[in-house]
Length: 182
Image 1 (cartoon, rainbow, N blue to C red):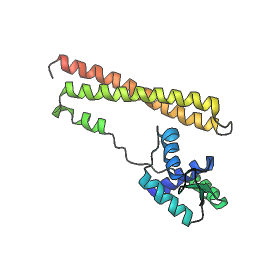
Image 2: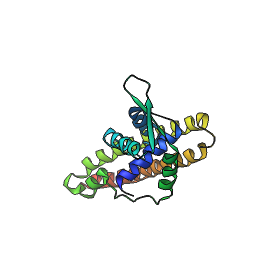
Image 3: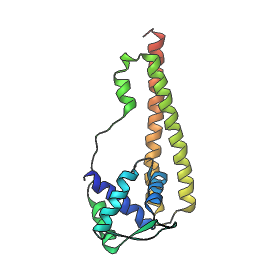
Image 4: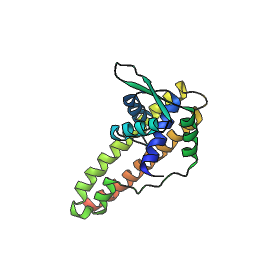
């Protein structure tokens, strides 16, 4: 699935929950999907225009003068289902932390340790944010959406816990390298 199609899927899916302005759409994606998905304004607004031109969304008055709130059309909902049935596209990973660590001998063990400690902190923050998202979802989400949202949150929690375990193991390895004078 090309990038534009994945963006269309994210936009249509978010709009299936409620009509939103482009700005609110970006904020909702960030707040609810940010642990595993991101879209920039530079991706969202062209997608909204493309989807509107295709008759998949329509624009109405937004919450501020001059803004438009977008909502799905019936054909937009049908397209959403089609896109969701397509297999997800595997994107090549890009992890700057692992890139630096792979060539860590250029930095040395102490500098690598600092990077991994920072990475660990980010993973801990992500786990805390996911715990908050879990509480919010359990308390306030639509019962029809809740089990699916909780499954997605659980995937993020597992990933964050794995990152913490990896960071702890790597810090111990780097500490041993430092102790050996490397």
